[in-house]
Amino acid sequence: MMSGPEISRMPKHGKKYIAALEGTSDIPRSAGDAVALVKTLAPAKFDETVELHVSTSADPRHAEQQIREVAPLPHGTGKQTRVVVFAEGETARAAEAAGADFVADDELIAKIEEGWTEFDVSLATPDQMGKIGRLGRYLGRKGLMPNPRTGTVVQPDDIADAIEDMKKGRVEIRLDRDAIIHVLVGKVSFSDEHLLENLESVVDTIVRAKPSGLKGQLVKSATLASTMGPPVKLVIDETGGTES
Image 1 (cartoon, rainbow, N blue to C red):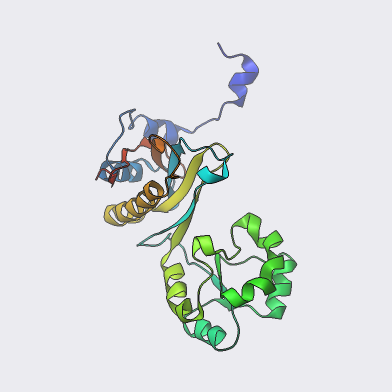
Image 2 (cartoon, rainbow, N blue to C red):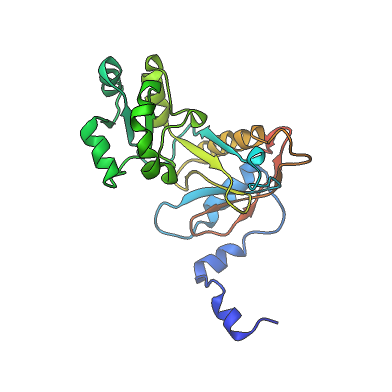
């Protein structure tokens, strides 16, 4: 039995959350059913974010079992993506023409060193990495540093396509210290079809990212939930992604 202090530390949920919780069950659902239910159970008046939470059997203490990938969202994140590009000369001009929100010069780099990070993703051409390496201490911990592994270090000829891809929307997939992946897949206001397609893209990326040395299943359990709503258990078939 829990003592008084333990009970007081338990999270308190409002009537809307409790009412929504009654609409869920412990039965894992197909992706289509989970998306529809999560939207129905979202209790807030604002446009809640829909997030996927995946508990994995990977061990983040071992480098070979780390997971860090990027998944495209066919229908975006539900917000504008601000892109900064580190490039010079003709490539910088091409970036501006392709819709980059900021093209970094020495002044902007100095501004970043002072703490400015009002952008969502950064791209860089390979020749700029030596120049901006010192920004890793400011951008690395926020996941904003260009990195070949996340597809944000791109060749000059690919800069326009990369900007277009970033503007469409994508999310980073990585393990937390408890071997859980937390990743957004859209907004409650999205249509069921658009949320489902975003979700399938994320799940496919997670399944493909299974470390080669990991035995057995990568996914232990998965839930889908809106910002303020209760979690809905989701079926993930590692041989074919989600069950629609």
